[in-house]
Length: 437
Ligand code: NAD
Image (cartoon, rainbow, N blue to C red; front, side, top):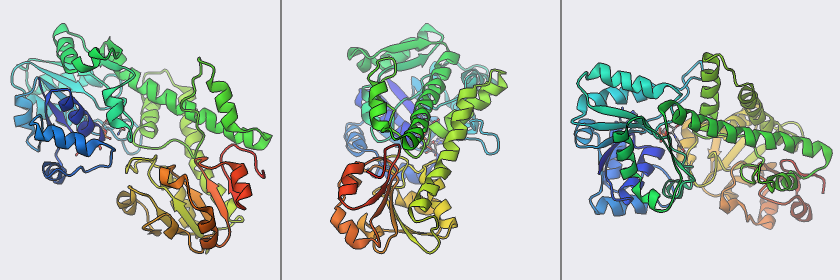
């Protein structure tokens, strides 16, 4: 089998590399020439654990190729995956489908013989039909099927998520297309991965329903955490107590500064818009979006409160900028709301992130970026943990106390225990746990 992967970002590059590991011959295509040049040189343009080795071994085996030439790649392919971005459209929050439709047109012109065109990008319900129409209008004689195959991988554990998924969802409406997809995912059949075949609309809807459900679960526990703080309860014990109920489940019940990243914020918003367009508003999701936006602002206020109510002229040390650990992705990271709010309030912000500072530099003004976690701390009034990178889990408290003006920590990821921090002599703010201890 031979496939072309259009778009070589977090999803396209990981999916392409994993399919090549499954034995498929893959050509990854991107418009971004510098990205393709780097990949050809063996450099990985994003930070994703394990991806360098996977790309190197499959490229060396001759199964994984990189090009900017979409036509060549598509001509030879049995299936063409569209894995381009679907960001929020400026102004209205709908998914911007211009990259998807642009790719569909280019694919239509390049197709040679029967081709399965697969949307791997997250696209609103109805998009597959539109892709079908775009291809038909561009090439009346094209022999093709459109399939929806949404991706559920998470940045930071993307390879494992792709290789051992909870399920694979395939919206395909002809037996011919289903057979091509079965061949591509043959390795996952062997390990008995549940593979769900649906129509196009159902498959597209599953992806949004999954992401908005998860965003809702996070938002629920965040609100419970706020209530726990006022009521003297511990949100971690509450999460465990409810999560042990099999109907609820233990995952995604960790409180924090609000969900962020390249998917949940844009996908929740896009589903809200889609639902309104269909005249079936999703009021729960609308509320989730609203709560989450306000939460990020409230997190900056927590840091200001820890600084005594005013940060003007004060130094705030920030650990972690990426939206979660093990990625350099800064898209919609909570830090993008929190840090500018602190700068606007007059704080001097010194920040460190192990992987995302190159990206962060382009997105934040007035911040001093430091080389190590401890470099952020000299003379700092407050130390705030925004992302739970492993290296922030075992900081040397004595060293922190010697460096900071006063030992004040705001832990927005609940990396530490309040009791431990009290014993270490810190004034400590976390999420949803009683303090003072
Ligand atoms: P990304 O921005 O990292 O990558 C998209 C790539 O597509 C870019 O490199 C861009 O240059 C390229 N591109 C755009 N138009 C092109 C064209 N016509 N021809 C060739 N290349 C083109 O995006 P991403 O994070 O990989 O997300 C891709 C899709 O997958 C989105 O719909 C997203 O919602 C979905 N998704 C993302 C994740 C995630 O964790 N990032 C997880 C699941 C699903």
